[in-house]
Image 1 (cartoon, rainbow, N blue to C red):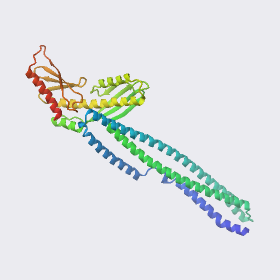
Image 2 (image 1 turned 180 degrees about the horizontal axis):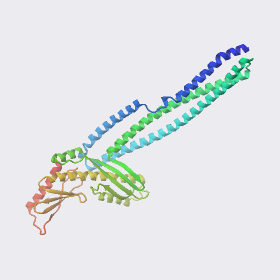
Image 3 (image 1 turned 45 degrees about the vertical axis):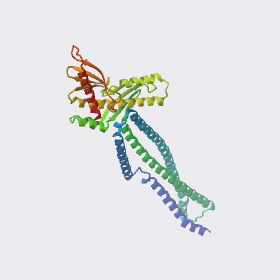
Image 4 (image 1 turned 90 degrees about the vertical axis):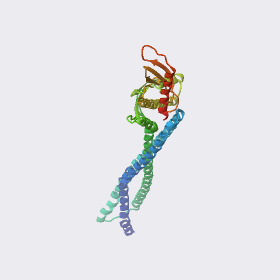
Length: 400
């Protein structure tokens, strides 16, 4: 009986321990392997290529949309801006949701990884205990008579079964960690893609928050002039080159605990926004109990109106520059929204610019005539015809 036990132990025990040692070593190496590394360079290059392709298609789409902006009226233009704003809000909401999922999965992965390392260390300790209690006794027994009790065999068998169970459990945790890691990589890819799209749409809407500290908000506003308007002005006079992109900054000061306007400054101050500021303040005075989301919408309305004002002012100044190259002299006042025409004989004609001109083909209106000389002159019918011809000249510059 003892001879059979010795034969069983000499043939099976070393093999079982070697199997366990090998398996534990594989688990340790797998823990330190590149399977838990970050995204490979090939995956990063693929992501970059996809973002570039998406960016090119987005730019082509926006370019085609901006080429048609000159044909839109004020209502259509405002509706288009509202549509872009809703799309931006949807992307931001999706971005927040994905960020929360990534945080949850990252936390789960870190907890599983820590538990895996702890179990692996416990398994190594168990193997060392088994070796010290079992194999060492076999080697020391070679000098004398070896007798292994049935109780020790049962204990050893139970230890082997526990090791097998721990190995199976670790295998399950490894597979679970692989799935979690794969999900994290997928979500990280989606997050970076959504973040890239969000940056593109932020750039295309033309508004970016530079600083938000206390009650002061500093915004960067970029205006893309419609290509058709820029080309039309530059074709009139070759030596006048208007920029196709205009950059301004808005420094907005709000009331404590709300988004109600307190003070606004624009840099450079080449555009008059006083009327827009007064309209926004009047709105908050009439509706002081509005909720925060509606107040934010009112602030967005204010910023969009400033963008429209910058666009109209720039186009008007461009047309006045073109008209100055003719036989008349013109000046544009953005504060009064009037064009002053200096005519022969020291007489100035003050022309009121209509709402939306020159984006819309609305008519200009003669407000008054004023002589720069001390004595007044009679205004003849012929002179009035010349003034009417001058106004028609400005309208022709816009329509042609």
